[in-house]
Length: 81
Image (tube, rainbow, N blue to C red; front, side):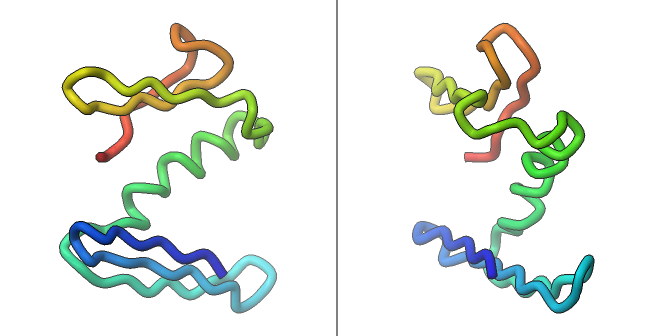
């Protein structure tokens, strides 16, 4: 089971495997936490499931977050904050 919780918005999501390639998703709150995380998992899978230490995170002065693979100037995308 994978659980996500955002204290500030009281949003939550829970993914529970229910078969080999099937899972049940439950979520509630103003933020769709699963929809925010799904692009990260897709990115990871499409790039051959790289090890966590290959990823980095840049946080800018304005509070924006950018996840990158192998180097800050490489493959990257913005994360919801």
